[in-house]
Image (cartoon, rainbow, N blue to C red; front, side):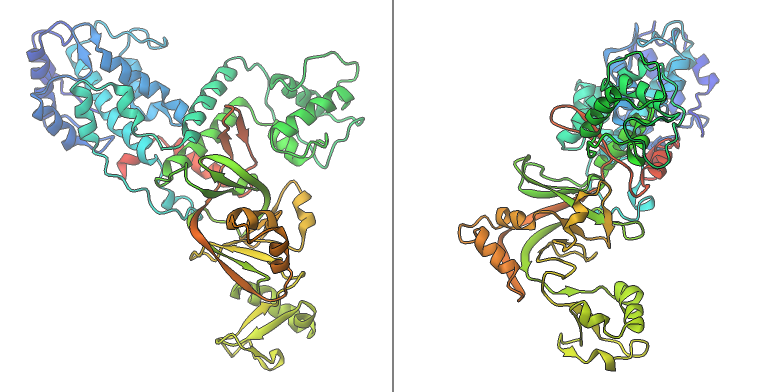
Length: 546
């Protein structure tokens, strides 16, 4: 990584240091340094913008005064230091280089006294360059999602923000914090996320545990002994789900620990069965730093999001939480468990408007499922289609004799499953047309909702209690429970248009903070977090590629 280089020759031409000289002397120092061909401001890629900005203001300092850092300078340094609460890396914005110039680099409130003219000028430009990079990364995200996550299908976040103009506002008197606050995502989730990360850093200060991985294969039930129990017990105590207590048998999963584990499971969105299985062990193995890293990844996802009116009526599906919420003015009016795409059929993240409901639907089998599953099944069992209540139709949707279709040579045919209780879509589907052929639907396999891990579909979202969901969406006295159940079991497809379009937002969030401020963490079912975390810690601001 290249550094900002300040020519010594330019600094030597100034008779007095920046902190003891007049504004005109500061201007002269900056002018000579910025206009020198030896000066490189390259980490943000904003070399010419920075030169032009200072030139337009007669090379006046923004961050320094006669006593060291000005109030604005201190505020800018604080914003860089506090970027860790955004899940960013303060070192990306020159914190380490800035700290090297301080007389007390290890202290929270850093002092900058006795600096040479070269160091003073360097401090000014490090803060300015850091401003450009931090402003971009807060407003748009550090990582480009299109280059990292193929399942991120939201439209690219559009921005008209002029970072040079924002810097000008600060130079003209606007508060640094207020300028940066305008760059945050327009979501309470983000503000609450910052607070939750701040609290995790406080927790980390008191962390004295060893966080070596406590391996658990299979399941541990109350009354059983296991070598992982002592470590897991200490972690339940650490997270305040269990009071510390003495035991003569440290490897025994006793009733006291059982009660604490149930509280932990319930708090973390798990089935509170008091069994230590793979999901519980995975969760308890995460240290405060691990949780900070998970939170950081999800704060970046929120920065990627296009502008959304979170107060409007909407359907929000968090794939990683296996949950659907129907929101009105940011309040949850209905919630339901969902089943999402399994591995290799991952549910993408995107938004689209829901416009109609189909009762007693046909299931038009996707070509990939037809090729990979249906045709091989038919080859083994000629009666497979009739047993599954399926039929083959031509391009006009007309049923044809399936036995006469040569799938290896003929095209234009497709398989569909007739309406009914055994239909793979269940008895109703909720349509928000999109290019990914993803929708929300019922399922005949309702027992699967009792599973803790529900990544089981081909990508679509299967919903528990679809009749209740239909009633709240239709919001019409004519569509009471009786009529909805009749339409669902009619055996004949019926399409009902909604009287408005309702945004459906599919997210993948393995961390969020609720209205109560509580941090929530979920399993990374698609293993998407690791690559994003690596990119966030790469040491390269997104402004480099903007």
